[in-house]
Length: 307
Image 1 (tube, rainbow, N blue to C red):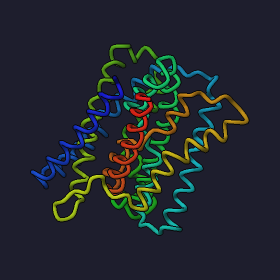
Image 2: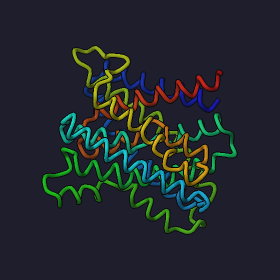
Image 3: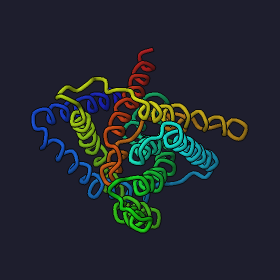
Image 4: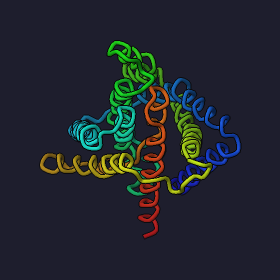
């Protein structure tokens, strides 16, 4: 049921974003950008802080987490090489592709899929992966890519470094969450922060729909969005290479938890839109990659439930 509700919410939010942009072209685009700022500066920091402060890390899974970091880093490096050296994309496009690989929808999509496909007993493993792999990939990797490749991050290395630290409030929330005692994260506040995650989903996918429609030519929106080379590369990196490399690295060492395999194959996350808007990456590549990867994963999950 959680998978179907999440699917319905995604489809409805994207449709509302598309309809709004077609009816109010300028207003919808501005609303999408304000929505991304709302998530970045208001909704995301408390979610990260309270969930990290309340997290209990099981060291038995430490090797799997380290291998997951290694897999993401290796794939990101390979995607950067193909984007910049083979496809010769502009820096803002290269950064967009990298962000699509580094940001993962392991929260509000990964959690219900874990429960639906693997069972509630595996949810704690999914939470560990989300907090300790997806979190650093976003806060250090994706925000770092935005600062390095974005058109609004500055011209000099010093300006881009400043942009990384000044436009990354979730990073400070994560640091505080790791340092804070569990007493500062009572169950009630953790529940409230998790409710904010539910609010992020429709807001974020509204922005995806509006961005897709905003980039359409001559007022006509192609559905599905075009599967060009940058988007295809991001899909291969995010949905194929990361989970495959993780399983390859883990095979001779550990029995990789099922939840890790599932979470590694989750689609590009909405946080990619936040990074893209904050630093000036190619918003359309990010929106199209999120739409394609989400559709692929959701359809695969629904199909597995029906089999």
